[in-house]
Length: 204
Length: 204
Image (cartoon, rainbow over all chains, first blue to last red):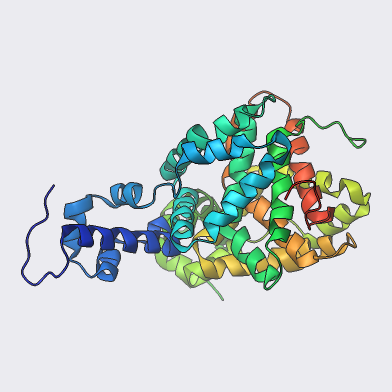
């Protein structure tokens, strides 16, 4: 697909495409999927709305391209499975917080997950991808029963943290060590991934 | 505020108001805050859109009235604080799942939390209410440090479970005991509410 040549445009095609993608990432993250309009993000990118459609087609298609996973699942999976099984929750918590503390990555994953909460179709696609490529192989690597259920529970934790938890918790931590957050979240992931799920405590 | 009298209207004012509220709850839960329109829910309730505005003003105001907490925080708090401290996570998990398994309650809390994820203003109001009336007093009742941080972590778990976790996990559990879910979630709440948050494990 080649872009139309326009008089007075200072950026080349690839610069324009990149500007549109960057604007899309910011707006999907800040406004969510529903409120992001092709017109609004064209304005933010400083291009014609027609050019956005020309390059990327529909809003849903642009979303798919702009807001992909901000990491390479295979590499992350290898890293998470590399250490001892009883510290996998800690590694997963560190990995997630690392993403949330990097501006562009945070925009991507926040856009992805806010869109998933708003739109059933997007939700299924995002969950399927993350589950298939990362969470299910991770849970299966633990050699305990109920891998699909564990993957779903971890996904639920991640959605909560990305959509509301991280902002609130960061405010509350203001100035204190982020290790507190790792210490709070790591064991939660660990529990979901490796603990016996059937209750066996003294209370019932 | 009194409703205009209209020829041919079969329901009284209170019936009409109730029909609007019920339609609003269903639509906010199913479509989220952004996609719910006054016109759409008037159609569903079988009334004029003008009547919805007349009774409830803006969409935001209708949201506030229709989608309130599906429980009485004071009573829930008393119940949660009544038993032993080391089983509070189990009680909270049971309470949440009970809400999610009751149709109208699930619609209310799902609508509330999906709207909170989509809209920053709604998010702050919902979180402030739930935190002030339930989660913060609950965390304070545990007599451990960092009550506000713990309340935020529990809120994060609840958002993840209500927005995506419960549906997925219920599908995966199909036909198996819901006790598995209590066993998976209870210890997560317990950890957030009472465990030491600073990491002190053997790994760094």
